[in-house]
Amino acid sequence: MASIERDSNGIKEYHEVIIEALIEAKQKEEKAEKTMMKWGLLFLGILAAGIIYIVLKLMSGESVSSYLSLLLSDIIIVVWLAVLFFCFYYFDVKSKKYEKAEKDFEELKEDVIDRASDIWNSNQLEVKRISQYHELKNKYDINLYHK
Image (cartoon, rainbow, N blue to C red):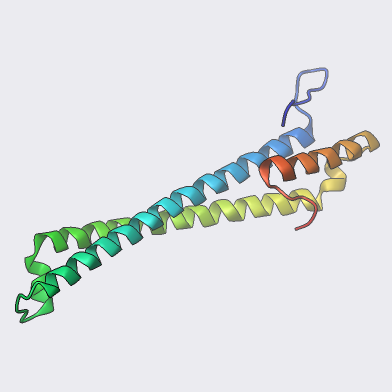
């Protein structure tokens, strides 16, 4: 938020703490999504490069008695397989981290929506709530108007 209001003791108001928690959860979700996408694209790129290499190797005209022996005799293919498994593992880890961040954000968002009347419990705060909802929607893409 542009300015965080504090009471006379310098302590943040409850609704401001909730808004900050929502923003942090959304940013954590977005960061996890970007990381997951990077690992996914890296995995697909390495997969495509390896498939192209294997196709070119097969088209080179070498006689192949066994595809397994072709795969295991070429050090490039063995390294490619190891890197491919490593990238898939990290993509899976990052995917689970993203799912957890997304779930945490959605739970917090639903909790805020359900408890909105308790959080913004005065007429003055009710007016502020509408402006905060609008700012969250426009600035952070957090929609608190509905679940």
